[in-house]
Length: 123
Image 1 (cartoon, rainbow, N blue to C red):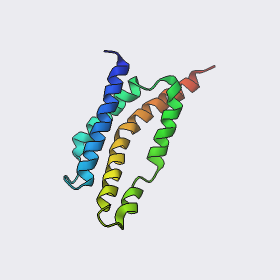
Image 2: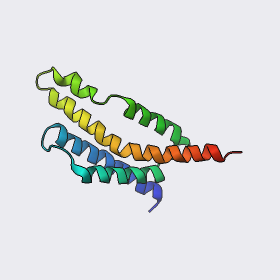
Image 3: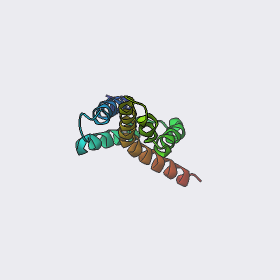
Image 4: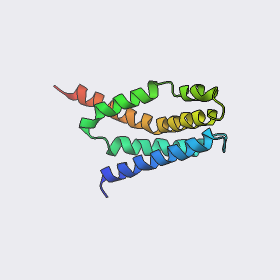
């Protein structure tokens, strides 16, 4: 199987895990998603960073990651807090975005290091 396919499957797995864990945590079904979920997302994020994103896609990927990580994702919890019945929705969105950050951060670190190395090695 090609490395790109493995990366694509890893990305899809990350999204599914992030959504399911986010729903479970945000809805209060579990207190936290546990360290294993975070570890799995980080490992899959490393796989995505090493295999999936092409050289042309590095800059858009890093910009998207910066936007995701820099945004105050807890704003969803606050935005829905005063609305009866919708506070759970805010917590779910917040938890999903936090889980997505678990897997995009390692991919971003790998791609940023690769980009820095490529810039430093040019003559």
